[in-house]
Length: 67
Image (tube, rainbow, N blue to C red; front, side, top):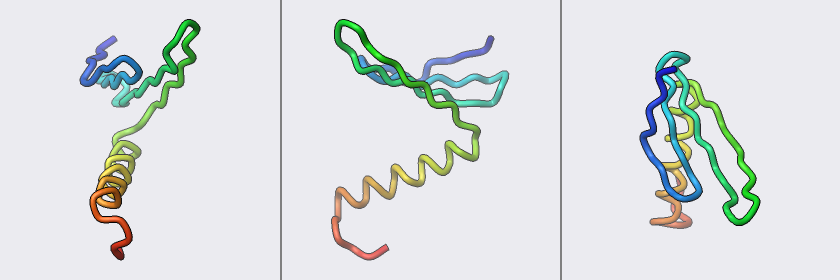
């Protein structure tokens, strides 16, 4: 298993699985009985997610501007 944690906070962990060429993002609700959700992204899906996050960031910085 060739997992490498590249980002980690109390509620979010981002791991690269080099063998399967995937990125896994695990989110936790925290608290006494945390619930977890793990998303598995291929490189193409990761690129699409990065594009969407960058668009969201631009929207926050300059709401209402045309694309």
